[in-house]
Every structure is written in structure tokens, then in C-alpha cells.
Length: 125
Image (cartoon, rainbow, N blue to C red):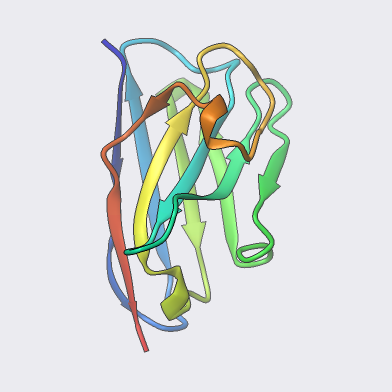
């Protein structure tokens, strides 16, 4: 059974940093894309960042470009999201996601087959 487990969320002041981790189990995702999405209260889930499975090509939402960095460590079957210069509007439940087969770092949530339970990030002003 495939599982994605996020960690690293918490409460931080505006301007601070957090590093989210996502550990996958049940299969390896070395050649498949993985990504991060987030959902704030009362809002729809939105794309944050993704990384392709083969070339490591990255894709970011405009709102986080230059502040967030996605990376992966295939030997550990893990993906990370380094978040710097956090803003109150970054407050949300952050989800890790993985595609079953495809390598492309898609921004479309419906192209991801596996999801974690989420980790809460709260940024105070």
C-alpha cells in the first residue's frame, strides 16, 4: 500500500523559514513526478511546486517563485519543500502528492494519483 507522509509543518513568524518533508513508502517514485499542493480554509486546493522524476525539472506557482525550493532524494524516496520568506498568505494545509507513472512536473492536481494527509503551516504576521 502506497503511503505519503508529510512532516515539518508548524507555526512561524512572517519572514521565517520551514522545511517540509514527504516520505513515500509502498513503492519507489524515482521516475515519477512529485509535488506539493496547499489548501487554505475556505479556498480550493492549489498547486505550489512539482519536480519531475527523471530530469529533476522543477515547476513553481508564481506566488512562491524565488521563495520556495522543491527537491527530491530518490535514495530515500523523499521530496522536500524549503520555504523561505514566509508570508501570512502562505498559511495552509500542505499536501505531498505523487504521480503513478508519469515524469512530468504537472501543476494539475487531478494528474496526481497519491496524496498524503497534509501538514499544517501557519505564518503569523
